[in-house]
Amino acid sequence: MNISIATPQEIVPIDRARMRQTVRTVLAGEDVVDYEISLAFVDNPTIHRLNLRYLHHDEPTDVLSFPLSEPKASKLAGELVLGVEVAAEQAAARGHDVQTELILYVIHGLLHLCGYDDHDDAARTTMRQRERYYLQQLGLPDITE
Image (cartoon, rainbow, N blue to C red; front, side, top):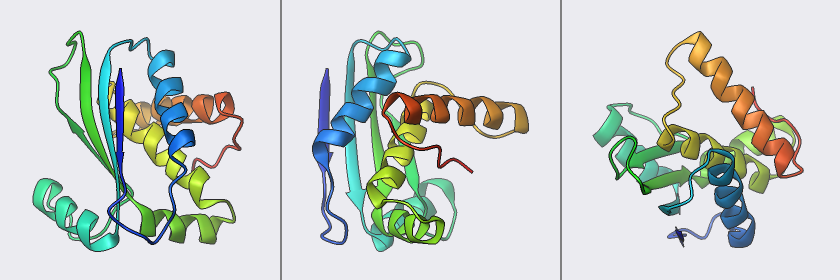
């Protein structure tokens, strides 16, 4: 079990302990016992560039998930790139803490790495239910849309 955190930005301070606890809680809940997860909290120009390069979306986004292991592998490996400026904007607009918004992004990204998707209504509903479940497990309010 390995969780690495990079914060190549100074816009939003990152509560590393809460982010690690979030990863541990979600992966335990998804019955993932062996993992190597990297979290990178980046600014808008960085996540915009990655979003354009990998998903062909010409805008900053909240979270990008990069699986680094094959589906059903014994060890889950992946990287999440999280947009701190998007999180700050969303948190301010919706009236909650930026750390909570970032935790939602970590949950969402981890669920993608665990095989969930949100490409249709049924899958999106399932994913939102799991997000709410983990927010509750972490003692946080339901901030899902």
